[in-house]
Image (tube, rainbow, N blue to C red; front, side):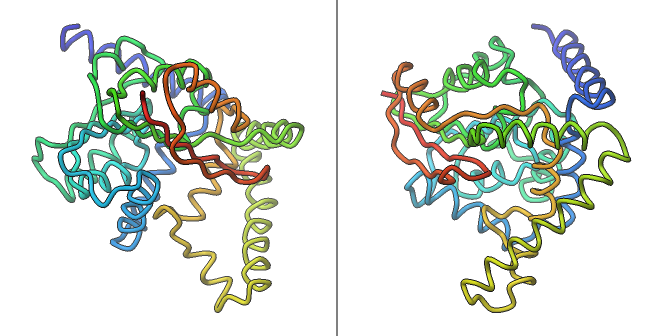
Length: 287
């Protein structure tokens, strides 16, 4: 594909995404991650690095290639690069691509070991064209594509033999998942919907976290919960991502394990939310 054709394709993808947002069919993920960059600090970056080391069971990524599918804020591409990997990042959302480019500019200006592109995981030719990687990472992304199982299949293509696939997928809660889909549709319906959803649910999330911390006798529970840095993320931006995150699909852990087992992958690491709300995390190794 020529450069002109690639740029035309990217422009078409951007228009398609923006059209979905304007029709209430897609959350403005990139806009949310642009705001997140204002609170990004060294503590959050180190937490992201710790998350990668723990889940991949490595001390570093030196000598490894790392593909970040749906790079979002760019935080985990940055973490992988700081751990020594040669990184390729891409996202469907143009603003998310801009976030990732901004982090590369801040921390690795002019770095040839970190490439940032716009593209869709649903574009099989695009994904195949990326080549093979030691680590393919896609945390909380593939269920937002509108075609999750195709996205899951395409995400497996660039994993090299012996390489690792690290993904996180929303847990299937049955009827509760249907309820959350309605909440997301209301949030994305327009300003009034966003106001209703945020005014109802953000206080709930704060209270739930604070009460949980009090029961566990943690110090300064409300302050701690508002500033928690699990994976280096921000609770507020995570809440908005959850409340507005359309498209929205879910899967039970066993369905994901079977899906990749049938494609020549072995489960290496699994962390579930125990039937609750949130993402189940999987690390597979390609046989």
